[in-house]
Length: 513
Image (cartoon, rainbow, N blue to C red; front, side, top):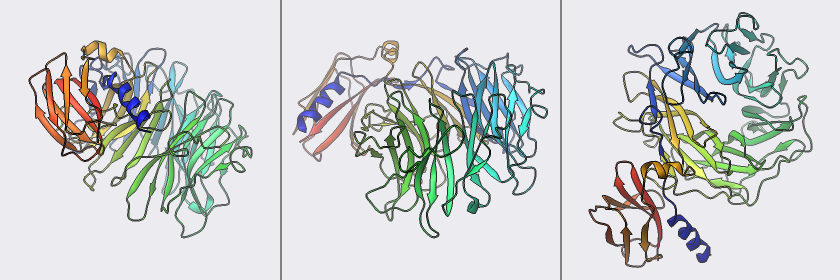
């Protein structure tokens, strides 16, 4: 086991932490602000973001102050696209208190999903069609929107668009006794009456949180169910055929119920996504008696079987933290997984947003970091702290760059939106652009009393972090070599963070025997 571990370290020594904010995007990697208004108590609440493959532009779906929605389109450099809405922004006043969920590309235009509520406790799903210039396609549906009023108690939570062209919506019912719901719009935007509106029966309570269409046309739905009154909910993945009937060849009679080896309270799958190898990742959380909330990832195949080689028997758990929940997950072409989470580290309502990278075998990539090993903390320029940042959505561009959208109340008196673009450590261009030095040696490893650091460039500062992310040593350095005393460190795994300049650093790992 030690030999394998040292091999991992040796491989790590050859790599440089290339992840950083993309300076080609608005100069610092971020676009922030208010979509329409900058008065007191104006709020922005981004719902989704889309990468337009034909142009490289980004389109953000946003809601403001409970009174309307906006689409904002940006060029690849982060500048507002003046060809859209005249200034890059198009406003759509709310009709019947609309609530938007997702945006999808539709030819050279867009389609928006959501629900509207013409009166109390009445919720109907809708599809809205937008032209390429941001104007509403008024020939579609009823003045640009197709609302299915025959479904009137369906609270839409998520939607997806697959290769079939259909847009599928899932969520839950106002009356929980009825069961979670699923419906679909045809490729032409009409309600798919043959698929219908189907509710999950046979459980005391059910809630769909995520949906995806597999390449073969089957539909995966994830969420939670409660088997009996008074019990805590259990995580659930269900597979349907294209016509909405249950695929009984998947898992056990159409269902996969992940089972945990420890006592738990609420257990939920929040997000599912398809990896390049054809398997599926699911992310969620589990609350445990007296041990807070654990974030969890599972990996399974399209037959509903857990991939035992991933993590521990198909499961990977992140450390417990107060009020943590996953927001979104994406995979790259190498089957690496990126999970964005929002948590309350201070135990109050202040949010921070972190991205984790998990390797295909279910191990964390500790080199994916801008501070704590294995964590990339979203840090917006101009903010005094990073505890007022709420990530809402994350996508990955074809070039491997991550795009994160969310809101923050740390820049003004309002809740402003933000879009950030990140170059991951999978992109070699990040190393070339910043000319970060590759030759940094740390020895001996494992170490007992001292470690020696040798570099081709002058170092500015050194930090040693423990495996739980705590800084256990820090010092300034103005030399190309240094010797650190580590004999008082507890035996274990440590990260050495070496800073060369404002945006230039290298992480190295060592073991203290």
